[in-house]
Length: 544
Image 1 (cartoon, rainbow, N blue to C red):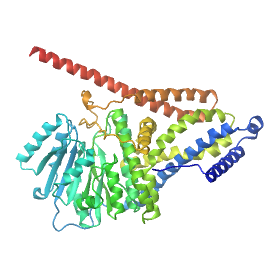
Image 2 (cartoon, one colour):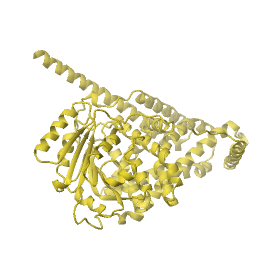
Image 3 (cartoon, one colour):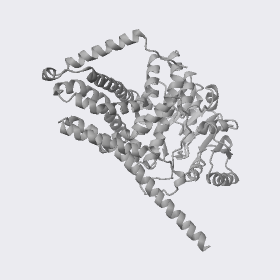
Image 4 (cartoon, rainbow, N blue to C red):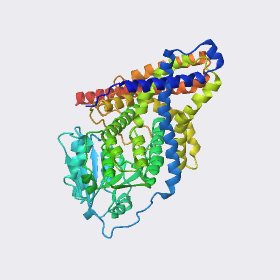
């Protein structure tokens, strides 16, 4: 148990910091303002935490610039093919973990069976934890492929112990391959995936090869466009900067291939976090295993098309990464790896703390605007502009650069989606703050799956299965309330001539209203479709 006490020395230090911050604020105030009104202790109690939080957020913003710099430095060093090849190809096990994936499982198995690899060296495991009709359907489907001569087997668990991590670990017990490839249910592996990745393991030090994600339904709606840009920042910039610079980076849970002995050496798949992939990645790299990133290999996947599905996925990742930070950061910081590796691991594993910090900034924003009513333009430029450049401009630069690298002929299109991208970030604030706080408090929750519907391209589909969808509960109402709060702050900013704050406040208004309203609308439409479907089924049954 960790106990924290406020010792006299700490209190003296806090008082010293407070006094220094007070003198700094006083020095930056207009003479006119100082003559009219001098800040009171309550004002400092508002301003100091506000700017302290913005400073922390700015550090993560500056880290984005560091990632851009690392990308430009190492992008030409990324491998396109293995430096050496096997004289005799190794056995490979392909694991397909699924859970109630009735819409996409057939596509997944069909595309996996197209992999170009000798059948006598290939094993395909369908790891099914399904509790709905997916279970018998998938079992029959696998039997058909077995009858056609494919080396595929069906493994169904009667419980979801350990969730995905438990399914993968259970599959390893009967895995015959030296190398293990993993694809989630919404992914489509390229035909040449194994041919292009296996030879990297000719180097005995290589433990994992990760490929880049692509998106079947990138242009389906604004939400999928924004998600693609968010993920592009990770796969285009961050992975290249980290792997090229010799820092730790993570296996992303799918579209990658791992050495079985590395998994075992690192302690196997563990399920005490919701991001078992990041957990295993850091444990393995602490053991000395090398990871390789190959961005030239693109593996297509399906993005969530519903707002709440997107939020649930992001909150799971936020909570899981925070759990990994709490679990492994002490060991990482105590290890003998270089300082640059430790520093990058810290920034990689802790960025989601920014979500509860954003909640705190939001709560302080209105009183800060009131306190700073008389503050001059000079002080706004000296204090606010550097923080804005570090915190907000870095977001724009980060995702525009990533988009430009993928789509050099049409990269300016990214600017059209930047407001929506920032609004989507705002839309994650409440649910991800809850996820981070739960992780910090040690509150365990089940693995919430992301609904997939076999949606590709821009063709609209009706999503009618209510049992297949997540329930949003109180979240959209909290988001609408938060949007209304920021709408009131926008009105105050206009009334007090604080026009510089208005664009940022409107992002909060739009983000919260967008998330809350679209979630309620999608659930309402789905409920209507489900009721019609049930009524039609009842009518047909009555006729029969």
